[in-house]
Image 1 (cartoon, rainbow, N blue to C red):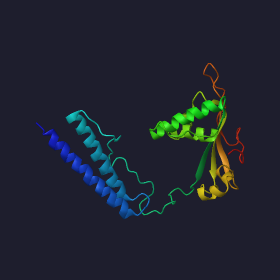
Image 2 (image 1 turned 90 degrees about the horizontal axis):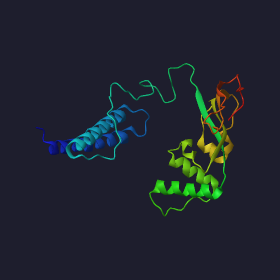
Image 3 (image 1 turned 45 degrees about the vertical axis):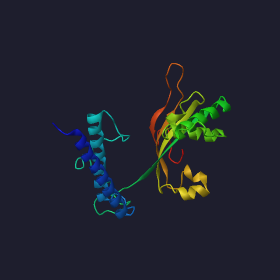
Image 4 (image 1 turned 30 degrees about the vertical axis):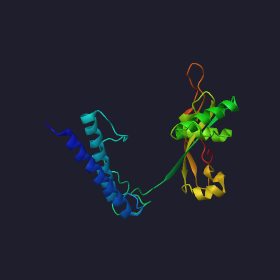
Length: 230
């Protein structure tokens, strides 16, 4: 019969060793993208953590706070670039950068109700009932988005009534520069010279029966002319 307490201790030591090796690899990589040693030590740390979590559950009926799944190092490579290839280079002779942009409008029936919902979201995020809530509609909306893990699904609340929306896919000549956007916020959604809309999806609010009259996905040139959108 396996000595489970001793086995748990052994696997925990593997987790500690794997964490140290991963940290050493991260430091040695110096911020390099797709470093192979960082990836391999990450997988080792992940799998050691997974094994510890499973053995702890089997031996004591307890779990760790780590939400991990075992990774097959050989069957699931992470490297996005080819070996020796500089960041930004690809084997595709026609590389492209696409910008996915979403706009959805909402009606605010009650500003005070929306502020209260934003305050509840902020308190959940901080795990503190004494956290001060948002003071503006914009801040309340951002708190709800954060509470929804950055998704617009966080805005599916009674305090906001969804109106029409649109999603566009734009092929852009240059990727987004957040430093430039700090000085000129319009840069975030402006369609620049050489950019073109290549797909568009119109969103209609659902009626009481749950039906929607959304126009569906449209490629540029059929309901989504190039040079528009954003």
